[in-house]
Image (cartoon, rainbow, N blue to C red; front, side, top):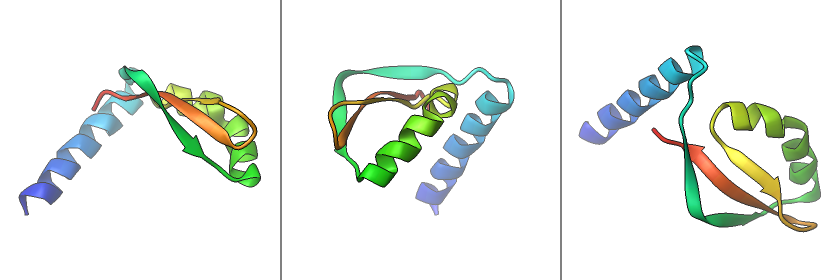
Length: 74
């Protein structure tokens, strides 16, 4: 299955970047706003730095929303 193969290649690239501590980030021109529950908001606040190290830039954007400013380049 060509789609599954592509997903595996992307996964392996992301793993290699993670191991090398060199995850490249693609900053979004327009942040994506996502609604979250209070429990999810609390969890995101506690892992925000870990997510950033993996290339996912997420910041609070109100009482029940977060803004995604960047994603891993892969």
